[in-house]
Image 1 (cartoon, rainbow, N blue to C red):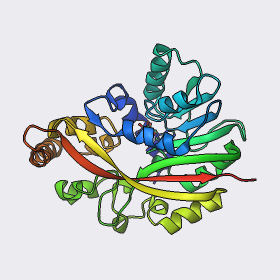
Image 2 (tube, protein in one colour):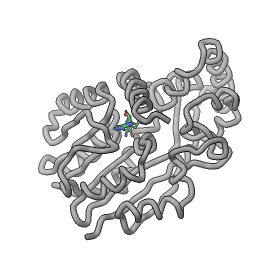
Image 3 (cartoon, rainbow, N blue to C red):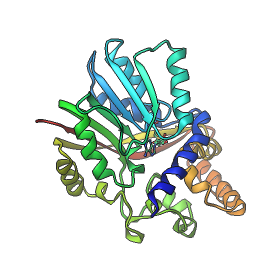
Image 4 (spheres, rainbow, N blue to C red):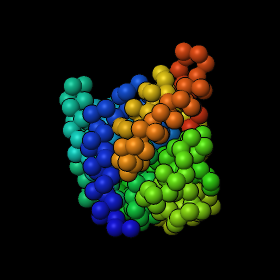
Length: 286
Ligand SMILES: C[S@@+](CC[C@H](N)C(=O)[O-])C[C@H]1O[C@@H](n2cnc3c(N)ncnc32)[C@H](O)[C@@H]1O
């Protein structure tokens, strides 16, 4: 895979998604971001780096915990995400939050200058995440902690989507997509290190982390309707899937998903999908 071209594609997809990202009536990144910050537990005055901060699902809750004496730096490859974060921080008068356009795989930031590193569903987009983790260890002060989240990659299901979607999305549509979308048995996905807890632990330890914890916990994704969910899916990583489909295939998939998702609702009630999420924590001790 050409990793530079892949990153440009990711940045473009999230640039176009930024304006509506997680703002279309689906609750997912917001509760996941809050939980991640709870697990990272940055106290008042701490210095936090949020890698692939998006619109700030983790960054703003971290800003609350560290308070004005702390500092939160968000980085993202998608400029529009960074603009949204800056606008929100300025609207809220939060001067201890900064946001920078930067490749999170190799951040150009001073060594040992952070107490916490966060990565909410972002490290999974790094073509060589194990190497990036080693760099993150170098950015943490002694005793510093990383906490990141990822999907729970399960053999036989398509990554990034709740398992239920493996039945709803025809396999032939997904098989033409980039490798990170493929189930492990179909390709050598670059997220394979995250799949088995023993590989994940070994990767974290090799990168320089100890006290590694893997916490699998579902997030209850709630959407007003099937249509709301499908519209929202264009505003996050699944946009990469939509943009690979022909107009015809996209229209057919849209109808199929809306119908199937609405069948899961209790009458006019909201749609609720349990999404398995993996949170990983590790500490640097020198
Ligand atoms: C699924 S979003 C999650 C955003 C946010 N952390 C949240 O929880 O809402 C993934 C984010 O990672 C960013 N991203 C992907 N690859 C990146 C890279 N190499 N460096 C920095 N950011 C990256 C994307 O632009 C996007 O904003």
